[in-house]
Every structure is written in C-alpha cells, then in structure tokens.
Image 1: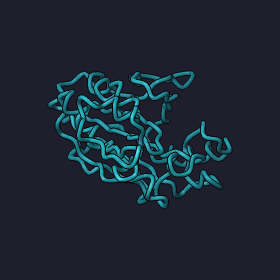
Image 2: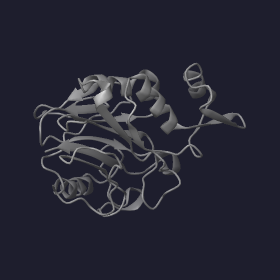
Image 3: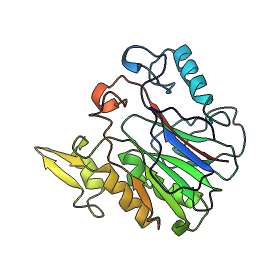
Length: 242
C-alpha cells in the first residue's frame, strides 16, 4: 500500500484490506491566495502550474494517474477501463480493474465512496443536492454491478446540516421522500445532506453506510468551501483496489 498523508482523511469503514481510499484536505500544496494550498481543481481559477504541481504530489501517493472527470452535477457514471483522451463528463466513476484510481472533486458537495465486500469493485460519486435529487447515488450503486447487500459506502466531507442553507425550491424537490430532513430558518431551510444520502442509498438497497459528521463550511483549516468563500479550491476523494 502506498503512503497516505497524515492530513488526509481515510474512511472509517470495514473495507477489505486491498481497498484504499481517502479525501485530501486543503493543506500541503503550493497554491496561493483563496486556493491555498492543496487545490486539485483545474476549473476554479487557480494558476494551472500550481494545480499541476499539486496533482503531481497526489500522484506520488497513487498506483496510477487519476482519470479526472468534468463534473456537471448530473447522474452519468463513467466506468474506468483505460485512458481517456479528454476528461469525460460525469459525476461518478467505478472500476473493476486493480490499480485504477477513481476520483471526484468537491468543496461542499458530498463525495461518496463505494466498494464491495470482496474488494474487487470500487467507485466514487459527487453528490450535490441536484445530483441527489436526480439519482446519482442510485446510478452509482447500479453501475457497481453487484448485489447492493454486498456493497458498502462512506460519506466524505461535505457541508454540515447546521450550515447547509437552501431555498424552498430545494426543500420542495425532496418534500415527498424526505419531509423531516429540513429545518426552517426564516424564509430558508437547513438541509442534512448526510441524512438524505443515507436515505437515497438505502432506497437503492445499500444499507452499510459509514462516515458523515464533517462540515466543510465551518472547518476552514481543513476544507475548501464554495459556500463560504465562493473563490476557492477543491479536495479530491479517491479510491482504488490492489
């Protein structure tokens, strides 16, 4: 197993020993200003040379280069089987091949890691409220091509339920399935993205769900947050098996 930085967050899940997963934090890189310092996003305004250096630092902890996605808050799942000439458009990735790295970028949205109990299938999804409403987690579970009872998931760092303020349109999108998941704050609502993700995963048949409890908005030392800063970097959540 390759070395993982002590600053990065490893899932607290009972994954097989050949599965490695982690989410990076904002420290330890070369980016400056609002992207300080370990920004891995190449579409958020940072100096491209800094992003390249940061991605090289990440690469040193991985068995293979990352196949990055062009994330669009959708439900498309990419199966990683080889090299893409360009970044494919999608918001989740799975692989059934050893040594291939699946990754998504986030800065308040929820990264969800997946693996099966045999340790020969892994995946990761990028889930904001729109992706959750449209079914990105169900799509990722389906793309794992495994009995959902044989899968487990880990909920990585996202904006917490005491900070995720949304409008009535978002609350309405989940009104039927998640009526108790929103707390009114004036004319706005607080949304629990972790609870909603668990609900979505359970509806897809996946009941072994771990993680949650982070808040990217309030923990400025460790996490980038788009809601907090608007101009900011991105963390990566990566997973592979050996």
